[in-house]
Length: 201
Image (tube, rainbow, N blue to C red):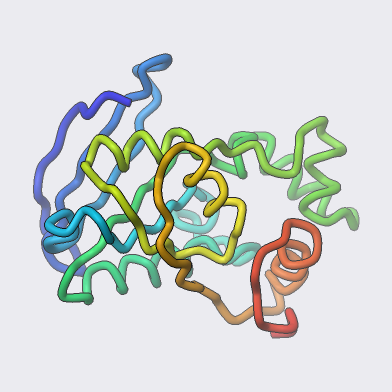
């Protein structure tokens, strides 16, 4: 990853340093780190959320998933803690299949498939995201160990596989709604997400 540009900006959650990275193999592909407070002052233990872009929920207000709520919750934690925190915002829409294919998958879900089977029907794995990008970004920021905000054990394994020490996992659960209950239940049953809720809204 190439640390390309950065600046501090005001936000609804206070000042935040925005650091933009370019992928070495594709300079047009940008990913962002949001650094709140003095998060990098203790690089051996940094509160971190690795979050993949979800245009449909975060911009268009879709309620089919819990992505927007998870992002908002993570930002609140990072900005409110005295030690701050870091949000990595990765441009991996639709668990890596892209926006157009994500909408195609939504159409298949409307016909009865769950999110995993819809991806398979389109010829994709259930999750195509790679965590080497996040690991490289953290290394560029000087981060040595993280407290990871996630329900997904694959994120823990993915970061550790690329040399990032995950000290602990912090759950970041959102209560299901009538629109996303099936989606969350599928993440729990088929993707191994550690969700305590029974999936009922």
